Image 1 (cartoon, rainbow, N blue to C red):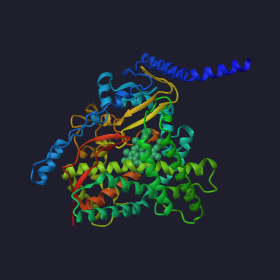
Image 2 (tube, rainbow, N blue to C red):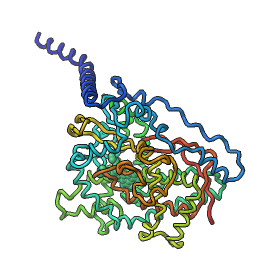
Image 3 (cartoon, rainbow, N blue to C red):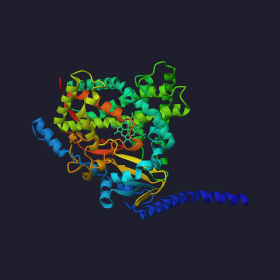
Image 4 (tube, protein in one colour):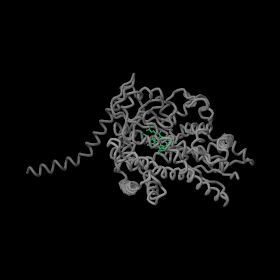
Amino acid sequence: MEEYFGLLMGVLFLLFLPGLVITYFWISSSMLRFQLRRNGLDGPQPSFPLGNLMEMYKKVAMLPPHPPTTSSSEEEEVESCSSQISHDIHSTVFPYFARWRKIYGKAFIYWLGTEPFLYIEDPEILKKITSGKLGQKWGKPDVFKHDRKPMFGTGLVMIDGDNWARHRNIIAPAFSTTNLNKMIAMMEHSTTKMLQEWINQVRKGANEIDVEKEITMNAAEIIAMTSFGISQEKGKEVFQKLQAMQILLFKKNRLVGVPFSKFFSPKQSYKAWKLGKEIDELLFDIISSRKKEDRVQDDLLGLLLAGNEEEARDEKKLTRRELVDECKTFFFGGHETTGLALTWTLLLLALYPEWQKLLREEIMEVSEGRPLNSDMLPKLIKMGWVWNEVLRLYSPAPNSLRQATEEIVIDEITVAKGTNMWIDVVGMHHDKDLWGDDVNEFKPERFKDSINGGCKHRMGYLPFGFGGRICIGRNLSLMEYKIVLSLILCKFTMSISPTYVHSPRIMLSLRPSQGVPLILHPLE
Ligand code: HEM
């Protein structure tokens, strides 16, 4: 009898378990919402279990493509394009935030599933809740850690606390200027190959080239070379598998924050896991064969391995697993961002040919026709302004994310432990209050006398994040940018194709969703 009773209780428990779990999620998120509201943080009404996801994923009306231009001369065409393309992109890429901001101001709470997110577009509030010792109370959101594990593993982007500090201290020296300078030749080699291909295509009569695709591919090749040496056969294989994984993960259903959503796409999750395992094995092999070599290779893996010598103390070493995850992190964190910075630049230079001319003149003045070297790169001053302005208008990393690891109380704001923070970088970079009336104009000269471009708040310009977690690869990226852009500008002038449709979209990064077809005119 007792056995039957036990069995019956077991069956009843299993039947009611889903209900209990759902009730738990519902009650805990309702309580948190009540607490946040009492603490003065309001926001749009969420529903259970999707939070505000429905409103966020509502179909956004596409921007109309350019009407076909009837002008005969190329100059007139460029002029008509540049006047039609608006850089006022915030409400296009984040329509829901633009809407909510009008109602609730520059700080409010919204929900991804049952996860609360504190939206911040006010640099002063950001400064207050993150500066000084408070910075240590923010980590990376747990909700994304699982989702992005196949990409970053336990690499620098995803880890927190003492473990993060240990990794950052070990990795930072690999990004020193002396080490980066050794990578110039790899960047030139890969880009020259791409440009030769463009010349061939133009000679064969190609009217236009989608530079987004080409530049991103080149950036991926460069980052794979500078991270773990793509020149070897195994490096190439890792590269191809990393690319396959990126496509796979991008397709994955992204019901972030919805309870149990990770079980919604088991087939894709399994494929990503399998690919991840294959990539790890290839990278483990590369590390093993590198360890047998006498020579230190000039890529990031080589430099990290050299710092990982036997005599180094344990806390100064990365395990093989950690090394593999850092290589993957460099690849995923580094290639798309740099590729997009270059892609948006080519679009803007095609729209503003006067800046093409200015940069070309600067390159000639600095290089006197010789290949660029590490002494010349810092002298490309105007190119630096253009880089800053492109990262302001079309920031490849459109947001930064954090999660409160403890309760944070500042003035009138209390942020409960576990609350996530979503910092709207695009919103800040397009805010008239911070930049003035010309906020949506392409004006690289605003960076001439100010590294902050004249922004009224020092935390209002954040293309590389902020605080201790600022991007570790920013100098590598700027170096690549200057080299690739100089090589392109010395070979071609460019204008925008009439088929171009201006449709910036967020797909993790800020991308031109329909590519960037440009008409290239060889200079020689
Ligand atoms: C234009 C190019 C780039 C942009 C716009 C960019 C943007 C960013 C941003 C915004 C963050 C901070 C994220 C946060 O606050 O949560 C970041 C962090 C990071 N970036 Fe970049 N990045 C670029 C290039 C690179 C490159 C080339 C690499 C590596 C080779 C790289 C590796 C990393 C890593 C490892 C972190 C994590 C740093 C940490 O948490 O300590 N990035 N990047």
